Image (tube, rainbow, N blue to C red; front, side, top):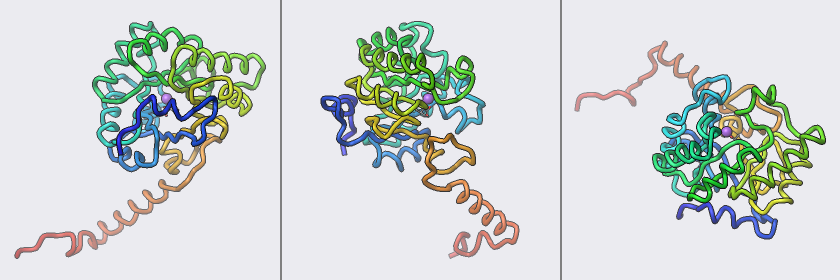
Length: 269
Ligand code: KIV
Ligand code: NA
């Protein structure tokens, strides 16, 4: 299987219609990427790794070096999906030039095909600057976690007329600027549908709508690694329980000296 490309992702939406929704999951490590890759169209190296991997309180302290280290691991572990790497907070908002310096490092040092950044109209100039210089950009609008301090929390967006108009304008702005796709996170469903219908590029929903052109979830949330997850997450499994039970069994066997047994020790010939 040859690796998908950004143009192939864009071509899945024809005249505003996506027959087969795009499948995206987050991945942060090589082994995780290997397991997810055959089932996905895109793998997102999300800055959610701040909370999920590093135990940080938000994504704000995630660095470019962290994103590059995990991005390279995910590229090494995948051969089919388009790998998209999040631009971390502080690495792109200052100017289009700053964004280019960060994004070019990400693509050069990881081998990923695209970057993602948060923001709508305010980031349009930056998206156009990167796109014109050969860097595919996925935008991210609605609930943008890097703006948690300005938004005051992680509540769903678009519950007022002003917010609704802003999110739709953001979607149009990033599409006009040349983004190849846009994540719509945590918005009232009608707005996700309105944006999806209003723009030619694929929308990827998370807490948005099944009518989006694709869906993304944080893999650990989907697997059931955490007790508490946002309303929009479906827990497809209970991996936390599997890990806890396995560790409990191992600990008991070590303490009773039943592990390692003859099967797991070397004996003289
Ligand atoms: O960082 C992340 O995992 C994301 C997705 C939730 C869209 O940005
Ligand atoms: Na992110």
